Image (cartoon, rainbow, N blue to C red):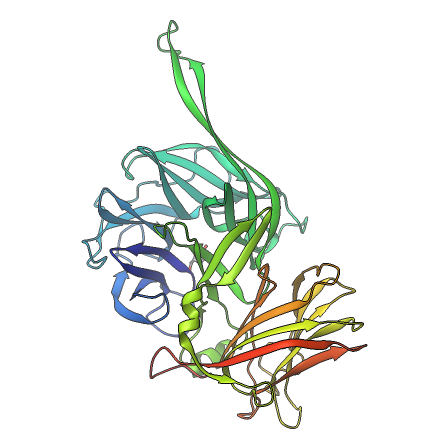
Length: 459
Ligand code: DQQ
C-alpha cells in the first residue's frame, strides 16, 4: 500500500481507502483498498473499492483522491491515469459497491494554456452550495502549486485560479518534479483553530502551510449586458508559516473530514529496505497511527490520537524496558549534553542500536540509524528535522515502536517516522542516550502495546 485516500467518518464508522497494488509488495497497478474501523485502531478489511476500468480514464491506475458526502450520497473524487484526469464514483450507505460516473472524467485535462508538472490528488470541500476542489500541480522552474476549481454538482467543474503557488527550495529542476518541489502532491486543505492549513507532499516529505483563507465577493462589469454587474467571489490563501508535518519515512498525508472539532491525519509509512527485501517480507508500506492536529497560537500541534492508548498492555518499570511493540514516554533534561535522547532497539552486545536525540548545536531532532541493523540492505542513513527546545524546556519524547516502524513525537510539535530493521531478535533494549555531557531522565513510562490482530506483521 501507499497513500491514504479519502479517510472519512460516516454513520459512526471510520473508513479508510488507500492506494493498493493487488499484485504484490511493490508500487504499481493502483487500486483503492478499503478498511473500516469503529475506533481508528482496530480495522476490518472490506472488498476493494476501486479498480482500473479497461479502456476507461483510469485504465492505468486509480490514483489518490478524497471522499465527501454529497446530499447523503458517499462520493469519491480521484485521479485516473493516463493522462491525469479527475474522476468521480458513488456508493451506497455502507461505502461499498462503488459505481463510477458514466461520463468520467469530470475534468479531462489541466486548464488550457497552463504547462503543469502534474495534475492529481484532488481534495474537495463544500462552501454553502458550492463545491471546491484543490488539485496538486506545479510549474517547471518555478515551484509547486495547488489549482482551484468550483462546481455545483461535483460533475461540472470550472477552473478558478491557483489557490497558492510555491517557490523552489532546491533551485534546480529534477527529472521527477516531485524531487525538486516543482510538483506538489496530495494537497489537503482545511480550517484549523481559526486559520487554514494546507498540507502538501513534495521533495519526499510532508509539509504544511498555515495561513488565512479569504473568500471575498467582488463586482465586475457584465460584458454581455454592460448596464449590469455580476458578483464574483475571489478565494485567496495567504500563508504566513511553513513547517514540516513529519521529517522521516512518511508521505502523502491526508486528514479526515466529518470528525467535528477533531482533525485526524493519516500518512503512508514508507519503506527503508530494498525492493527485494520488501517482496520477501510480502508487504510494503503501512498506515501511520492516527495523529490529531491542533493549533495553539501560531503553533501546529501534532499528537497521537488518544484512541491509540487503548492498545496499552502491561506497564513496564524503567529497569526492565525491552520490546519491539511499545509506547514510550520519556522526559529528558539535556543538562549540558549537546546531544541527548533515547537509545532504542539495543542489542545486548550493542551490535545494533538506534539513537533518537535532540542536537542542541544543530537544533535538530535526529535519528541515527548507522548502527540500527547489521543487515547491509537496510537503509542506515541519518534522519533529522529542525527543532528548537526553549530555555529550560525538557525534551518530551513519545515514541511508538512496532516492528520496524518507529513513530516519534517530540514536545507535541515535531514528528519523525523512521524505519529500522534490526537483524538480531534480542535487539529490543531501551536506554537513556547522552553524548558530550550529562543528561538526566526526569520521568519515564512505557507500555507493551497489544497487536490489533492475531496476524501482526513483525518484520
Ligand atoms: N501516489 C499516488 C499519486 C500521488 C502519489 C499514486 C503520492 O496519486 O501523487 O500511487 O505518493
